[in-house]
Length: 169
Figure 1 (cartoon, helix red, strand yellow):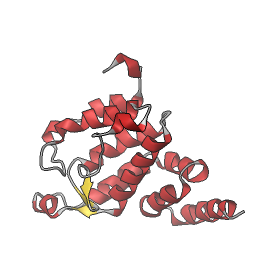
Figure 2 (cartoon, one colour; figure 1 turned 120 degrees about the vertical axis):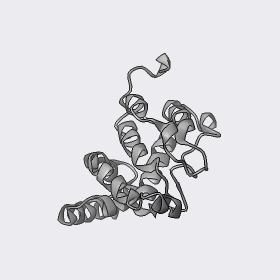
Figure 3 (cartoon, helix red, strand yellow; figure 1 turned 90 degrees about the vertical axis):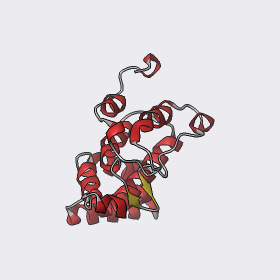
């Protein structure tokens, strides 16, 4: 791990997964994803992220690949850290694709037809990070994520009502 990042939970979580053993949406293994995550997490400017995106890797047109549920805890850990807004937005958008998507046909054929359920369950482990985003960050995307990922519909309705009411003032 690069010393310039210090001790970051997101990078520790990133190192817990055998990315090379997982199928990626680009047609290769996920072995390259740690480089993309590291570049995104460590970026200070938008220019530093050029060539490093999760689009087309975790999902393609909301069709999920094997790497997707493994990426969720990395993204959640990163959202708990200080991130530039452009990185935070990219991660939230990816979470929305992951909870709203469904397994790609190739993953269904490989016996992984429930990747979206795995992603939603993984988001559930960090549900309060998403609620924090809903109340103080990118409310619309966070609420979109919560609509799929929070099994407590009463809680979600209450939060949506308060957050959207506050935004309307």
